[in-house]
Amino acid sequence: ETGVTQTPRHLVMGMTNKKSLKCEQHLGHNAMYWYKQSAKKPLELMFVYNFKEQTENNSVPSRFSPECPNSSHLFLHLHTLQPEDSALYLCASSQEARDTDNYGYTFGSGTRLTVV
Amino acid sequence: GESVGLHLPTLSVQEGDNSIINCAYSNSASDYFIWYKQESGKGPQFIIDIRSNMDKRQGQRVTVLLNKTVKHLSLQIAATQPGDSAVYFCAEITGGFKTIFGAGTRLFVKA
Image: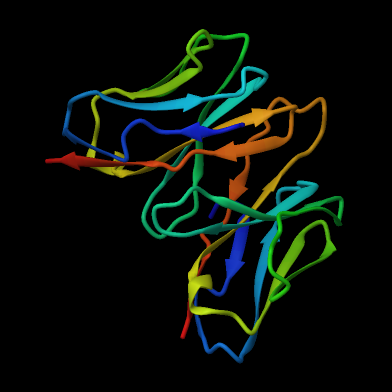
């Protein structure tokens, strides 16, 4: 366990389904992220939350909807997805502060999503 | 534009040999770099970092080298072991917070 927990680990959903991915961190970090990881592509940043406020939406389609109720929890709500949305969805957290010595991310293990 | 890329998509090494994974970056203003390791079924994990005011940093069996002149970053793994088999990502951090990941290099360790 890295301190960032993602559930479920695997998810198969139809194109008309609605599902949610959950991420939880117990590291005291104040920033959380959603990344999409597809085969043979770099990690694609989707959303950034800093102190529960969304600070970045990287041109993500509206069928993906993030929610950050507090600094420890992050959700990604999924609705009317397409087969090309099948990927590994990674959550990460970090401590965003000018005086930190480490700008590294702590990643969860991801949710493997398959859209059928 | 900004980019972080890897010279080799796959690398195969014999167990016990040293591995070198390379990464190029384009933003000379980047001030912090990180190498991550991603094993099958897991998310990327922090391995080692280096700041732009350094040219070398050593960890346990890993060394990161930074050449700012040619904007090149490398990860050296000494005495590569089967457990080192994974995808390795470099990441470039600019302005303290903006992180750009490279595409990744898959390392295969042959027994």
